[in-house]
Picture 1 (cartoon, rainbow over the protein chains, first blue to last red):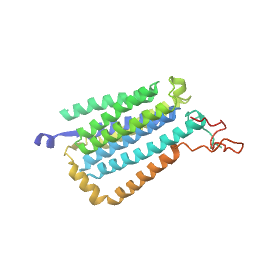
Picture 2: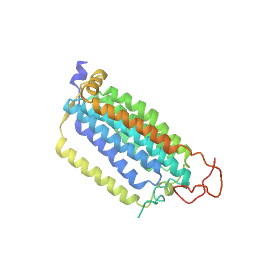
Picture 3: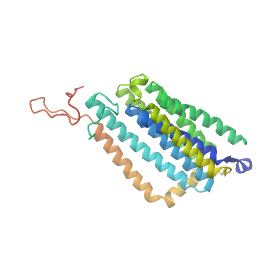
Amino acid sequence: MTSLLAATVRLPFLLFFGAFLFSCGVYGVLARRNAVLVLMSIELMLNAVNVNLVAFSGYLRQLTGQVFALFVITVAAAEIGIGLAIVILIYRNRETINVDEISLLKW
Amino acid sequence: MSAQEFAFVLVAVVGGIAALRLVTSRNVVHAALYLVVTLAMVGGTYLLVAAEFLAWVQVLIYVGAIVVLLLFSLMLTKAPIGRETLDNQQRGIAALVGAGVLAGLVFLIQDYFAGKKIVLRPARTAQVGTAIFRDFVLPFEVVSVLLLAALIGAVVIARKEEAPEAGPERRVPLIGRRERVHR
């Protein structure tokens, strides 16, 4: 236990990991056509945010960051449920889930 | 470099490579499996900064539930293979934007947080529970209502409507001009 208490991790390592995941998510959201893949990329970005929250929770020695990460996970689960329901409905109606072909609301 | 940092670098490299493959792979099912690896590695990161409750929540909800949901939706929709059908024409611009975001973030982090260290103190599950139920009761309740709303909403949206008797006054589908396929 004492060795664990003394152990440290450099904060930028975690933040770099989070930044990299977030950038991958940004690329995925912008470059993918398939709506399910876009949703996966959004999950990646939410995970990057969670990594940052947990990192700062450890750095500031408060649990608030971890509790926030839990809430983010919950909201992400709700979001993916609704998102996939919409995707399946669109597929049923239009036989495609390519986001650039679904332009019904585009002016 | 401490042992924790070494382990963290290993986990982060595996997770980063999997994330990169996730957004570039040409097969949607492979992308979902790379997502599993990335999420598991993020969970490993949580373990390494001694946030064990969050790590198990990550494994349970993300790896256990969300990925299964994504795989099911890949199964229900057509899962085409190939770069041209999965990616749009803006790949170059998207890569540029992603690289720009990464460069900006890395610069800012290096500028401000270089040399800062996390002293690992294990966050026990009881402490997390106390924090939730003492300081964050209201958000907790709101989140439960949100989950209920999402549940009902997902059921209502994805439910197959009972088609009325086929006749001349058959309802036109809300989206799209194709005739509805009855399955």
